[in-house]
Length: 174
Image (cartoon, rainbow, N blue to C red; front, side):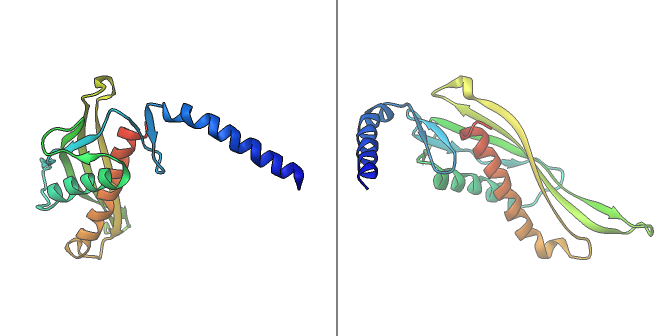
């Protein structure tokens, strides 16, 4: 029992000595793996225009708001009215359905909905961390289902995956 008390006291002393060192670090790590430099406090998300051949009329707003929500809920950053310390912009470049699993009678049993987005990330505090990249995500659904009946649910899932991947590329260095 006496040994454990000494170990606990040593750990407490070590923690007190380490605390000032850790407070001087320039990167804040959040519980979801994001590492955001201390000098970055605001983010801005521009409207992602829909430039796909087939246009889902609500996808532009849905995606833009989804990315804003992901940043607000996954970091300490606040959204700037104009341009923030970091800025996200881009466009929706694809919104397509394609048949999958074609059977012998040339009938598809599954269909895939794919969304492609081009993203520009500008880090005004550290321009070397800026990038431009394309992202895509898809969901498969049974071909006998009418897409208009399930499109909202599929789009919500795809937007969640895309915003997670964009957030991770910007703030988790993957």
